[in-house]
Image 1 (cartoon, rainbow, N blue to C red):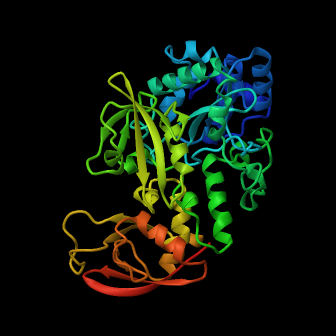
Image 2: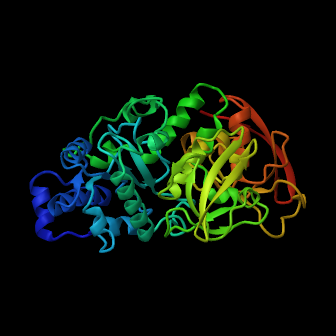
Length: 440
C-alpha cells in the first residue's frame, strides 16, 4: 500500500473536492481507493460486481476485508495489495474484490471474527464459503497467526475445492452460519447513524463502520437486554492455542507444537500433524479452525478431527469440557475496551507478576489498575474512587479471578447494568473496599 502519493495527484484530489485537508486517515483511505482503482487488479469495494463477474467466468472469489485506517496487519496487506510474486499467480485465478468497510455488508454471509482488521473470504459465486483467512491473538502482533505463505496455501486450497464443486457442496454447507441478529451492520441499534455506503463526498472515515464495531454492536445488543452475555458472544472465535494446539501460520492447519497436558494433547494431536478436517469441514487456515470452535457450544462436546501423519490419515477426537471457552484470552481484543466500560468502569487491569506489593496476599487474585479512564462511561471507576496502581484482590467476593478475562466473564454473566459490585483493593499497603458500578 503506497503511503505517499505524488504532489500532482494530491493537488488533483483537492481540486476535485474529494480530499479533506490535514487528516492522515482520510488521506489514507482516499489514496488507497485511487491506487487500487488505477491499478485495476482488484475490484474496489463492490461485491455485486465481483459476484456478477465470477458467475460469468466460473471463477472463485477472493474477498479481502481491510479496515484501512487500522495499522494492524498492515504489512500483510501491503504484500497482498501490491501483489506479492508468490501470490499473484494464485490471485489471477480468482475474481478479486477489496472491501474497506462493513457498511451494507451481508452479515448472513460475512460472519468472521470482527476483532480483525484484515480478513479474507474465499467463495463460490453462489455464496458457498470455501474458507476464511485472518487470525490474531495479540492487539498488534500478527506474525504468529498469519503470513503470506499461509495465505498462498489457503488460496490453493480454495482452488482445489472449486475444481471439485459442486460435488462437495454439501460438505461445505456448515461453513456458513445461522441467520444474524440483523442483516447488515447499520441495522443494529447502536450503528443506526451510519449509512449503507461510505461517504466520499464528506468525511469518509467518520462514515465507515469498522469490523470491530460490528462485534461491539453484537455485545451492546445483548447487554442492553440485561441478560447474561452468551459465551459465544463473550468468547468469540476461540484461538486453537487456548486448547494447547499451536498451529504454523505458514501452513493451512499444521501443528507446530502441542502443549503438554492440554486438551489437544489429551486428544492425541502430535507435532507435525496436518489437520485436514475438523467436525467434517475441510480446513484452509487457522481461521477455519476458529470457525468450527466458534460454533461448538460452551457446554462442551466432541469434535472429530482427521490429520495427516507420516503419510497416513489418522482419526482423532477432541473432547471439549464444559467451560472450555474460558481458557481463551479476550483481553487483547479491541472489543475489550467495551467490556471494560461494562465490567470495570474503564479500568485496564494487568496481572501482578513477580513479587507482590505490600499488603497483597501471596496467593489469589492480584490485578493492578494499569489505567483508569477519565472520560464518560469509562470514568465510572475513577468516579467511584479507584486509582491507577490499585491492586484488586477481590471482586464480588471472588478471589480466584486471576486474569482480566476472568473478571470480565464473571461480571458480565452475574451482574446487570445498574448493579454495584464490592471490590477489595490494596493501595499503598492498605486494604480498601469500594463499590464499582456495572454499566451498559
